[in-house]
Image (cartoon, rainbow, N blue to C red; front, side, top):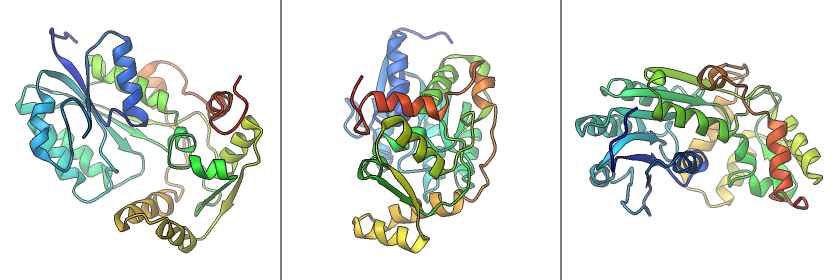
Length: 280
């Protein structure tokens, strides 16, 4: 890719799990980055389309993450509108982070594909970092991870792998028109993943399977909005039904290497003291 002087890479959700890593990698390569967020130097807000065009000014390519999830109503319309606006402004290279096994997310993928963009789609499985960056971190620290998920196995993917694939797709023409399903190298149940966290950190952490009703009740007691509760129920109860219990070669094909293993992730996070282990 030829990058003209002043052209930036726009990273939507640039403070999130994958966006932050994508921005760091691009910056590390000496490439100019614009963080797309409500608090960004040039504000970007999915719920305020009037902010989109300014964020696209002097941009070469865009990494797209949608908050809170592509499964929510209106996501596909927003993705399609944004992608068309980007193409109208001469920005064709668009890389979309999507959800593996989420039928609703595929509507957003289709909207991107029909926009005229030079697209790449990354369908990711559950992030390993959900256990250490927000979301399930408090549960791990409390000693009990309680979810309505049984023995279904999930190929947890490391956010560092997603970021590496995203940066490659943003900067290398070989990835145009490719849809990569990204998984880790092993299938683990949530109970097995929590056991690996306990072993790596030396902390007393256990997994407890609870009913869907108990899960919803707990979320309600936390004061979460109804739309967020509905989304979490969809992700934990519907998507985690075994549909993703198989490995893919998306990381290997796109990067030419094996994906990072959950055990290595757990050791790295434990060594950093995030789960209460002594920092080494």
